[in-house]
Image 1: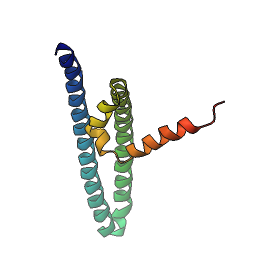
Image 2 (image 1 turned 60 degrees about the vertical axis):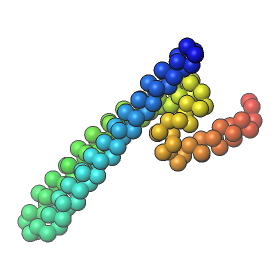
Image 3 (image 1 turned 135 degrees about the vertical axis):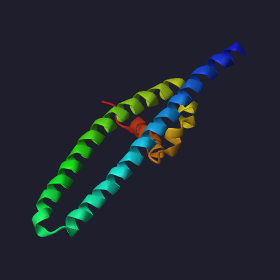
Image 4 (image 1 turned 90 degrees about the horizontal axis):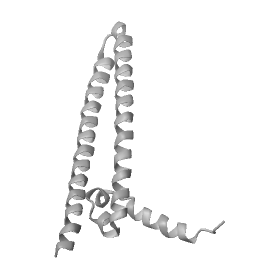
Length: 126
């Protein structure tokens, strides 16, 4: 019974990590949608502006796009690193742990990963 409790505790903590990462990803996606809406509004304003105002508005749109892109690249890189570490923790805990991860359940590419692993086993050995 005590051994079962030891196994449940890390798994519970892992699932909390899973949920936290899912929330972080969802927050980033929501922020990106908000940014897109702001850009669409700026572009609409630019397109309907008089000719003498368009160049300044275009520069503002491009500047904002570059700022957003730089920010999201930094955030995405950090998130990718966290997710990779998280997946490695699941792998160390066993196959069942990874299959229970909410992030893995939501990834359509996971079935492709299984195929990759099976194929890699068939690869000629050097």
